[in-house]
Image (cartoon, rainbow, N blue to C red; front, side, top):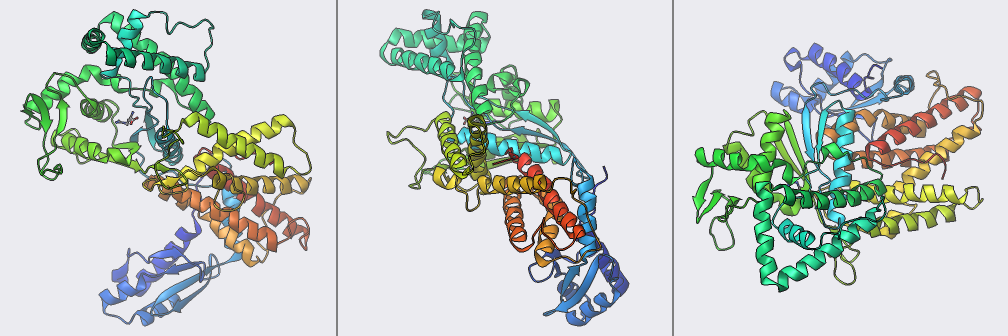
Length: 588
Ligand code: ARG
């Protein structure tokens, strides 16, 4: 289906031709068009142009206005203040625009990006043999929304789940398993995520205890790390058992999160093991990294510790071991040269920002990140408890992600049950919706604040029916669907000949803004902009529904046209929520 020219773009074109007719040297200048509260649009660009042309801004504005063709898209254009232009759109143009969007069921007329590229996005990266926590939730939720947004604009997206599946802690685990060989054997063929995690946890604790108390075990465990990095088959087989058991657990959590994670996209730290020596050799030969006290280090002018001494990025430790940095540098080589990415995005906790700053700078110096490749850490803030402190259990332990999700679903289920005063829903329906509302609430709370900010994890607020919550949006959607069902045989139908009420115009203009919102949210990796848009859409719909009777409107044409406004709003809500990874149940 063809993309639809937005009302903003049409106005922009009208202004551009009026501008170049008035002031030929201003051809191509930006009239700085914005959606506005005073009129439908406002253009503020005349001021700067007048200054440049040494003209009186109000006079120039008046001349431009006289050149604008009105009647089609633009109903009225007038000069205001020192030389702003206030623009009102015709009712016909609004409905015709929405009708064109409505006809494009798959994309609502949203254009594809003019210059799509290849983005590798690193998100949802839990650690093997460890419980997932709220930080992993943020990475998964934000990353998934960004993937959906980018793919919707036509970008080729390669997903990478850089799980923590390598490193010294595995020596201890493998050695323990070797000495207690049946600890990860399953009696049943199917193991639940929960069981898998508790198996791993039990093993981890036992291995740790031995490691801390038994010097000889410690030595054997350390030797095992060397075997692992050298690729000893028996050691690798034991390691694989931990990875497999962990994946059972990860996938169960991702499923709870209603998120599709594919096994082939999981390329953890271990996936770059074969590249580590080469990465170090290249860095050392080019002089980007130097030996310092036996370790291979990269130094930076502007990065110093509290004592004023430079803090290096350590690529290889003095004992020959590789760490997090070596893996990330190798991953960059793979993503740029192997996967041919022109953009790398990392959805990772802001507390790792220094690491990425150093890694990116190192890769630039080494020539792996050229001018045509962008590397960006989409850094997210910390999840806080109601008290404003980092989110912990009463005992001071990190909160398990699964417990949080379960609680969110429980509360949401209670809300759904309470709202169902007519007792129309079966128990199964209540459970299904409770899940969709609860998981949606958690995702939306995360996505509706800008990622770099810390946010408070407040379940009461998240499942509240009032305010900026996913439940509010889901109810708006379900309400519209119920109106459409009640309409029975009357089909939604656009009637461009009708005069619109103020609430209809406001709603219609906002529906048109979906396309530019998606483009902006994708370009800036800012799902919160889409969330804010959707919240406003639901609010404008509520106002419309209060002010404008739909099924009891004055004329049959008006009933059809209002049903049409309802439907195009519903589709926009549905599409927008889907891009955020949130379900919109038909009934609530
Ligand atoms: N596994 C890491 C953690 O739990 C996050 C990995 C981030 N990605 C990366 N390429 N370093 O903190």
